[in-house]
Image (cartoon, rainbow, N blue to C red):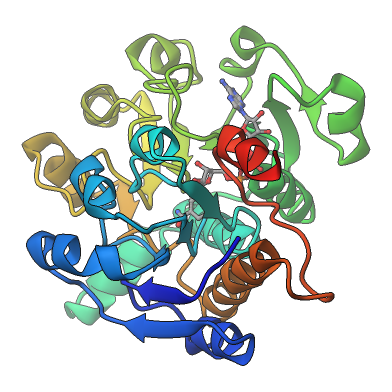
Length: 330
Ligand SMILES: NC(=O)c1ccc[n+]([C@@H]2O[C@H](COP(=O)([O-])OP(=O)(O)OC[C@H]3O[C@@H](n4cnc5c(N)ncnc54)[C@H](O)[C@@H]3O)[C@@H](O)[C@H]2O)c1
């Protein structure tokens, strides 16, 4: 693929532009362009790199006369209209593994925080109170953690939380019972998971099968006081149902990094965020120095591999629309 000129439209670590330039690719960084400006600029480029801010919608893609590839420096391509890109034979790439450890570590931090009420207790002390009784917690040792989605992040969460003495159970339609056992997760059907779990953490993509995976019926079949964690994608947990379960005490706490809309505007979401039993963070799963450098390097390595001019970078593991890749090879 002939990639001469790339537009970096979101603030991606400088490691990305450095590597592209080193391989003879011209790079322009123009962050947070309003949509009409992006539509004006895009015909000048044959590559586009984004993170989360720029939405690569069908009208942007329609205007992109010379565009060959769109890369997202991050996991998932929710902000890119992949169908429109595929229609125009534009390759879409992401960097699925680059921020897995960071997302995993935030998940573990949220679980441990919930067990010991770290965030609300710290907030209360800052406000001048000395509330030792109110913020007494519980141990994680001996508790059961259910992990839904045993891919890159789910597996790493299991390994780390086992060192806290948690029993790990889980479900993933493509990870076999034997494969899960290798990292000490007992794979079970969902209906057996709900009544056992003290904590449930979701690590699946948001797809039709996982939308509302945690809903009123599921929450009702869990232990009273079950705690829920979502560092994956908003929409996997039904927010209205979660709020009801928090209010009734059926859900003993929730830790959320992702929401149905981001930034959140819906009344239900805002009420969840303010609930005393909820710790909420503004989509920080991938927000570490290490992950940002890793995804920046990984996306540029894949662009360079596509040019076919490097002996060092030859693979594109983050291709999302394989049909376009197959057309390229014809
Ligand atoms: N909060 C953040 O900033 C952040 C950062 C990185 C990743 N993520 C998100 O975390 C999630 C997991 O990422 P990953 O890299 O581990 O992905 P992955 O592809 O490695 O693993 C996802 C797993 O979910 C499984 N799965 C699919 N449908 C399922 C279902 N119905 N029930 C149970 N499991 C199912 C898949 O088989 C797969 O093994 C993704 O949604 C990703 O976008 C969020």
